[in-house]
Length: 288
Length: 238
Image (cartoon, rainbow over all chains, first blue to last red; front, side, top):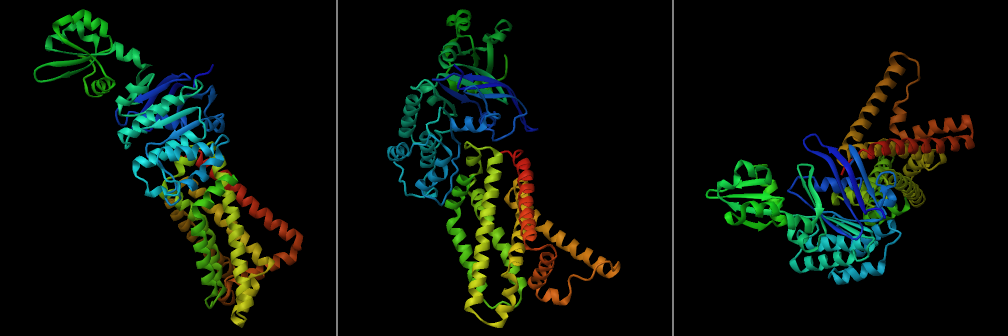
């Protein structure tokens, strides 16, 4: 069966920023977290998938279909939530839905009304009167109501209260129970991804640092804390990034087993969280 | 494409109603010359198209609709269909209000100004002028966006009008190859003058061919505008 999403050597050149050779796959039935610092290229990747910007190279396939050659079919299977939801401000939520529903053959009005109730959104309230969190909930309700097969969410949890964040994560988990569906989820809140993501793709400076199963990443990456001696020449290739503190050195390694074997009790070795990995790779020196 | 028009209808209906009421109130006031009526007709046509485009620009919803199951060409065609519907709707309002005013206010001044405009030639002139406005504006809008598109369109229109006046002056007074077009009588009542010239064309080629030619010209303008706008809009990035 085709993957929900395949990106192959995707490229985009803005002049002052380049997305280079971005390739990853998201199988059906899984949630992928797209992480990276601000300006890394996460939103650019999402916009390229949706053909909101023109690509300069590479290929995007959604359920096996080229996203340009079969644009309408592809988009009808995608539910998209932008990081800032834009809808007509002066319309009520019901009327906003009326401007969108006709474009989706699978729009489920009953489900939409049920979601409005579940998310505490008053149907007759104007969109402009909603708080940022409520706007995001509404965008999610819209994305879920046309029975998309692939949900693409750009920073959906920013601005949401912790209670609704949990509701959303539960809903996403339920969404992929139908194994034909998948979720691509871009966020800075890596704790959310540690809860629900199956795959993590890390983007930095327009390039993919890694794209792998989350459990594999969390098992194999480690933070090593110790004196400057841990940066001895023979250990250099072991570290992906290093932070030098006043009294110690912290280093990130993608080979936790080898780190444990080499340093044993001579250094403090901790499992790296996604936030650690993002922080070290963004802020640390490349190699020791 | 009708779905896109429906979306614009939901977003713009109250503003269209307001512009229609304002226009109707404007027509009722005593008019000194048909030029005022003729100037406000195209302004109404352009304003009505700008209403949904302005709302879309203000609320930044272009990115939302570009993400729906539509191609850029679909969106461009939808906007041209909306333009055609607005041209028809504004025409109904302009000619309906004109006819109502002519019937209710029986003053000779109204009769003199409105009589030449409320004719087949007047309608053909309106459709051609509206088609020309849209065909000029929409490609610029799709290339430059709402703000810059409107500025360039307005400046471009002024330059073209200025150039036309200059050429007319050169051709009629310096080279003396055509009779003067912008005579004092013409400028006093341009509506009547323009309609008389259209009448001349109609008499020369006959009514069926005239109607066919007018329709073909409007269709050609829209076709040209759709092609150009699609080319521009497909390059637009959000």
